[in-house]
Length: 226
Length: 395
Image 1: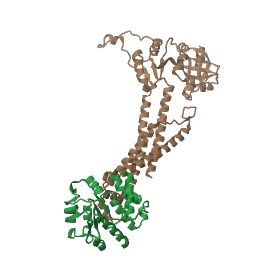
Image 2 (image 1 turned 60 degrees about the vertical axis):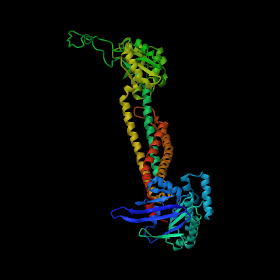
Image 3 (image 1 turned 90 degrees about the vertical axis):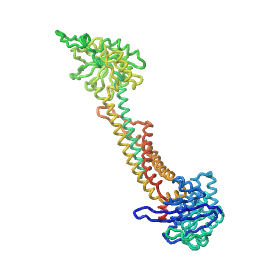
Image 4 (image 1 turned 180 degrees about the vertical axis):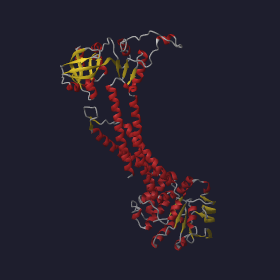
């Protein structure tokens, strides 16, 4: 399996009168087809590491390689374009745009990337939503859906531009056990399709057990990986 | 609310601008219609040097026993000068000899300005014929003892068409003249203070044979008056004053008034743009989560900026559109209002300027101020750091 994401000596320090180190000297490598869980106590730096891997935050030192490209040389626009094309995000709270329909939320990243014609964008969005069991919810607003359904919409949106890596931050943290199981199953299926990797921060032991690999973070450091 | 500010700003901008520019255009049109476009008068802009000065330019001379030559005032050789000017294209010219006189009738006396005119030529340079309520300039041409006066003056002297009156000149001559025409310009000072007789009659009454003291001109294009006046002055030597030169003070007052007007009405739009600034700033605050989502997805700062700039632009455009409609409504109401200005005997409608340019200025300024007001919050939106928002989380 080919490597898609690599962190080399990544450290993130919040500057200030008393600097706070969120992530310390992290080295890891993620491959296509992997379903990776990041676990650790609250405040250990799991989400901070996820944001760094997702190019939403910049390391204070170290490098992150995505699909063979050193992202440290990219400016804000370059990072945005890379996120748009190669990464997808799922957050604990669905973070859908409530003014938009379910379908439009999924179309939005494709519309920004403009790789497909508008009709093809809608067709792909519909297909993704149908595949995730939301074929009858296309034109509803996010606030008309259950928590589990919203999270599936968020997954469809993350998949819209066919990313290499899906990064999920506590994707089941706000769901009941049945919805959690469904989301877990979907993310696992995405990873095991072999085309992309899924990296998820989670407190959920069931979720972690479903992963191929668990990276444990304590005080910003990788305590274990395997 | 922010759009209402733009609506009111544009509407008042249009109402005030149309009124100001309408009154300015009306005022200038009245000047152009009621006064000669160019007046050649019996004076020199720079008097020619005296013979002694010409003979001894650098000397100081004492001349004894000199007596100034008594000369009849007026334009010398006015007929030749009139003919020379009449050769210029696109103009009409008439000679006038103006002087003071007293009209007496039924024991009442009134001082008037007597204008000696050539009726045939006067038709081409004055709209007095249009203001006639009885008789005509042609009737004056046909009657050497005729006179045309204002209807108001006739009423004050209990006179009517065909009545005789007595006219006394400063030279002590008295003539009985018959009223062959009455005019009503609506301006009291003219209707009570002006009278028209034949030029030859005026020359006799004022003791100035073969003289005119003004040559008055109307041009096909009144706005060429300044240029044509300079040509005429160079050709005949006498001072030729355009209507613009004669009204320079008034025109400069109008200019200053326009600056003040545009400053005040623009201030309304600037205040309205602060409303837009507040609204978009609030929207940016409320939409920080959505901005973070878009940026995490891969939207760039400039994409986010464009969204909020577009919002400002839409508010500005809608405000301009509705404001223009409201402004046109206000202008229609203003145009229907009748007023009677001091010194005028007739009511007139408020003069309104309907030009498209002021709509473009108002809408353009509104769009510009709305976009400028949206720029700062839009920039702030573009600078939102998604991690700061995503860390906070929310349902």
